[in-house]
Amino acid sequence: MNNYSNKELKALATRAARGAYMPWGLAEEAAASVAWLERHGIAGVGAFVDLLTANDGQDPANLAPVFGRDDNGSRKDARVCPILTGAYLSDLRGDNLSDNSLEIQFVFSPVLLVPFLVWVARDLGRSLWVQWGRVLVHVCGDGVEIVSGAEELELPMRQDVAISLAPGRPELTGVILARTDVSNRHRLILERFVQRTLLPESEASKTSGAGGDRIDDD
Image (cartoon, rainbow, N blue to C red):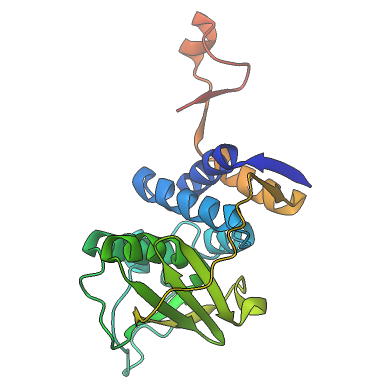
């Protein structure tokens, strides 16, 4: 088991996301999502590893959300990225949310979407419901309450997600964790993605004595 501070986890997650399929800005948002979940006592690293592995090498444009239902099955094999979805909702600052559910199909590891909805709720000054499968989460700008389905939060699968405005405020636990335990398996997978962000040392850098024996960080 490996223990990381919030800052260390963000750094590791950012580089791993960059090594998979995300540009830097999106990778930083992904890392912020993972770190927020773990800091608030919700397992996020496993879902993040599953997401990077499932979508490895994909063009982010093919992982973007389409809102509403795909009744003709044209996207039946889609694995929508929760980070792309969350970034889009954040950019809109909740302007497309109402009492009626906003439906997003085929979201992979949707727990990673939850922190973005916290930030949206903060912008709106309103609480939100987010639901997928048997999971129901009550979200506000200060945190979340897992109303049901806690045992399915981190499952690595595609789910249809519904988001709507909610009355009242969730009952927050108030638990904030300073550090996160990461299993050896998850650390090794993340570090394999990080290795892709490193470049072989050039002959010129060897001659000048720059960098280490094998790699230069790009």
